[in-house]
Image (cartoon, rainbow, N blue to C red):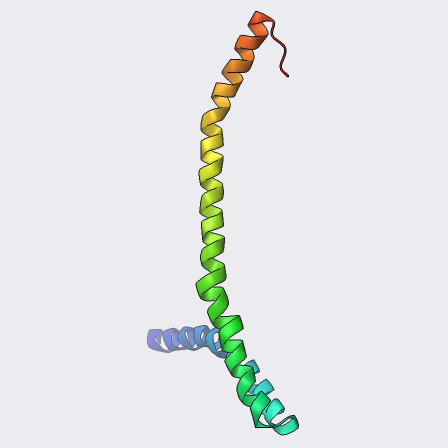
Length: 99
């Protein structure tokens, strides 16, 4: 029984893996019947390049770097903020106005 449930979960996980290719294959077959062989071959190649490869290897790493950079910059600002508060308190005690 456990093996059956594990097999069903495995198949359910594979659906999400192959779902986009099922759609793209259907569009390619449609293009083959309506426009000829060139668009039917070009469509999956372009989809592979611009929808699968580009986001995986270029866009996601850039987003990750931006996320990490934002955390680093926020941490550096948090380190500087108490210093700014202390300077502000010193200026208030001396009667110096902030510009």
